[in-house]
Image 1 (tube, one colour):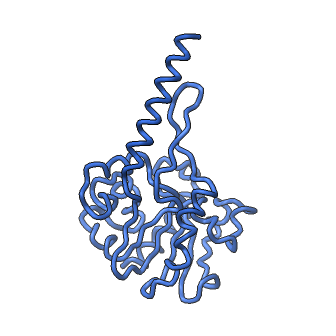
Image 2 (cartoon, rainbow, N blue to C red):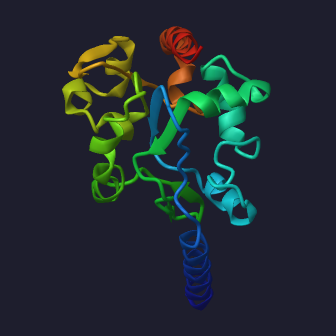
Image 3 (spheres, rainbow, N blue to C red):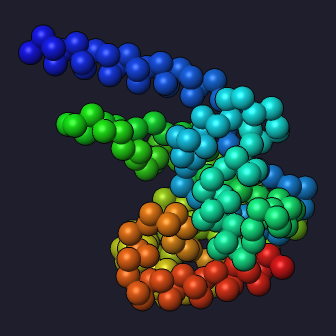
Length: 216
């Protein structure tokens, strides 16, 4: 019991130190001058958040070759590579439902597990800005990546139908915000469970074709 107590104290100390370290980093947002696309995702990964510690660029290296998820998973969804990263940077305003890392829990084995930002965190972050973001004059498209981002638009019925069912419809909504097309997509991480399903793989290829068209 004494050894377990010491382990728990050490774990709590490490978590407090990590929270202090993370709290010193600015929110991860990338905003070009005249974005055509507003991409809303869930929250930064812990690795992306910590990568900003020593990065002096305005966005903390968020949209750079240092962001492994961006280079390996997200750019290919838009038909891009690291060599065409500038096309992404020119056209996409990338923001999260919660722009600060929402920390993590540990299971009984002590393994770290990231968790979704809660409603309060989202309301205190994206909730304060979404009305202004929707009015950016150059904006033509809003892409909602993952369930948390999609909840911001109740007209999509994700709460009642679930994200997979809504995405599988491939329904481009033009009736929510005048002049803007809105489309929910799966989270593009290759670790996403939906890509174990052949139907969802085919839907995602269709989504990627659309994304490639709108960014070109």
